[in-house]
Length: 366
Ligand code: SAH
Image (tube, rainbow, N blue to C red; front, side, top):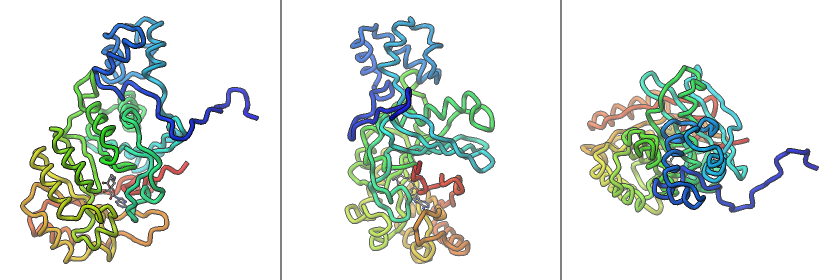
């Protein structure tokens, strides 16, 4: 028997997340408010509190009469997710959050403080359907797409905590967002794109973050990459390449069996041309698998003289994986060869490794 007050509601399988202000465009917000019998200008007031002031406490929204406030909050600002826990490391400069969504689904996001910026890494799906064998998220498969507001709320919550000083290190503002948490963002295209608009539309329509500070990372879903290029955004596109040859990439990034290395790179250059931004090529260095000098040369030849930057990621350990990070001398040689081709190359620092919060480690285990 459940105790009195215990949460007994279990969402039916396939139920949709409740509708939230952050799901809606400014025009849709006006309509939704009018449908509730409220004046359309209340939509702007609500947006100003949620996006402009980062306030999630309706009791302080005194420009809206109390009666309307209750109705508007109930219908447009339902609680979408709750924090199961925060875990920190790197002297509190990295904080991972485990979220529980309305139907019990778990997802994670990571907030990283640097001397000159704050970056949040967010999830776009619960789980992932891309099945890359070296990535922990891929191992459990896809649970479901996140709604736009479920994506946005990860950021909103981080921004509120930064503003109030709840994140160790004192007050700060969010500068960058990377869609590099759980999921393949371009496989949840419409919701991710709407989330990008909410993040970057000027306040009070959205949070007013710079498009240049947003990175969308993809395994290489070619048609969606072309579509994304036509949105007229100046976001950065990261391509998880991991191998320069189809034989190995077919294994490391299974979607390569559908869209090959040359097609995926063409789609990336098209994005670079349209957006004016350099493509970021992600390449996890895996010992004796993809870190040979000849592969560095092959990659260098494929991408030299392009608008590109290579981000090498020392492989992070994941449960049950037989692979490990490259030897330091192989990593150095890989960097040297790419640079010899004139390709800007950096090795990413592996923030959050000991809390399973680094690249490829998000598994959202309760
Ligand atoms: N699905 C998208 C977004 C996830 S981004 C994508 O793949 O691009 C997460 C990044 O971390 C990707 O580049 C992914 O390939 C990389 N990654 C996955 N597992 C990793 C691991 N064990 N070590 C290092 N990087 C990993």
